[in-house]
Image 1 (cartoon, rainbow, N blue to C red):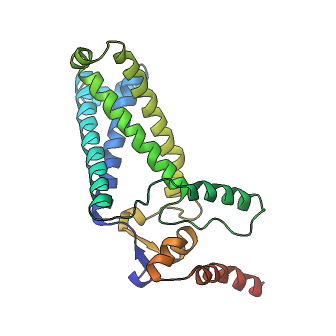
Image 2: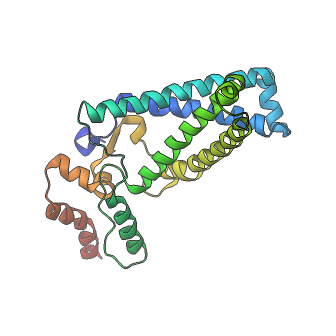
Length: 244
């Protein structure tokens, strides 16, 4: 695909951030599940391969610290970008996202002729983003409490430690399910991107996908009016009907 047929969607910085976060997440998932389900043969194999339970805990904690740093820098960069550099707060959930959800439900039920017109991120992407970011903040806070229980109980009630353990493991399972069932499906098995969405690898997306998935952003980038946008969206379907 030539650059003329594609549009830059993610910067090298965002690509590196995503894959660093992905690697840390995988290591945390493997070492965390091995400890949670230590009675399983596969878990025992992982623990022994890493050098024992102490080494497994050390790797898990170091990766947890890396996750804290990644999450903090992500929040700081986003805050500075929006406040000082006037970036568009494109990940904020707005009333339009709920309207898009209703419009898409009508479209899926055949009550509407076209899907919702979405901007840089769809309501589904925003839900996934905030679910994972919130969970990462909870896991980071509870993980530090479990790592330093004495310091935690010096400041807060001792009852917070078992609560932190429950929150830490349950939030981890929630994020794992979101990534496994939602994110991986949308990135690999969805009909629109199968067998792999390369956007987060090369940082570019085809103009055709932009037109269908993020038409409002495309209209803003190319200076298209809403009428021009709708005509261009409907053109392929009209051509197919004429051929039939």
